Image (cartoon, protein in one colour):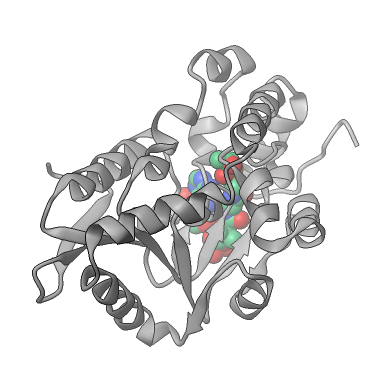
Length: 262
Ligand code: CAA
C-alpha cells in the first residue's frame, strides 16, 4: 500500500526482521490527522501480521516525532461531530492492538497526541534532543489519546500534573529520570541504538516475546479503560467551549489566546 505520510522499511539480517515506520509529514511537524492515523494503523497491522517481522520501530524525523493532533483540522470541530465520530478512538487505538513489540524512537518534539502515541509503544528510546509535553490545555482541550492516564502511570502523579496543567516540556534527561523513556542516546546514534535493541528482540522466541508483552501490560491495564472513556468524554465536551475555538484560532494565527473562562 502506498503511503502519503509514512516511510516504511525493513531492517536486519536474521530470520526475523524489524519493520520501521517513519512519520513523514514534515511541513506540519508530523501533526496527526485522520489520514496519518489510518496509514499508521495499516502499516502497524501489516507488520504485526507479517511472519518475517519480529519487532516494530516507530519514529519521526530528526526535528519532530509528532507535534500532536492536527490543530488546523480540529479547529472547527464541535461537540456533536466529535462525540458522534467518537473522535480519535477509531484509528488512534490501533497501536494498542499490535501484539508484537513496538519501540518508539523519539527525536525532537513529542507533544500532545505525539507524546501519547509514543507512550502507546512498549518503550521509548529517546535522542538527547527529545522534548515531551502535553500542551493540550494551551489550545483549550485536555489530552485526548490517553495522556491523562498513561503519563501518570509512567512518571507519577506529581510530574504528570505538572506537565498537563502547565503544558511545559520535559527534556530527554528529565524524561529518563522520570521513567518515561528507557534510554537516552546522542541524536546521531538513535536509530542505530533502536535498531540494535529491535534486533535483540528479533533474536528471541516470538511466543515468549509476545506473551511477555501481554504480561507486562496486565500490570497497567486494571482501570485504564474506564479512565480512557472518561478522558474521551471530557475531550469531546471541550469542543463545546469557546475557549477551544479561541485556543486553536490563536495558535493558527500565531497570537496569544484570550481565554474567556479563566
Ligand atoms: N497541528 C497542526 N499544525 C501544526 C501543529 C499541530 N499540532 N504543530 C505545528 N504545526 C504547524 C504550524 O502551524 C506551522 O505551520 P505553518 O508553517 O503553515 O505556519 C508548522 O507546523 C511549523 O510549526 P511552528 O512554526 O510552530 O514551529 P516551531 O519550531 O516554532 O514550534 C512546536 C514547534 C513547538 C512543535 C509548535 O509548532 C507547537 O507548539 N505545536 C503545537 C503543539 C500542540 O499544541 N500539540 C497538541 C495538539 S492537541 C492534541 O494533540 C490533542 C490530543 O490529545 C490528541
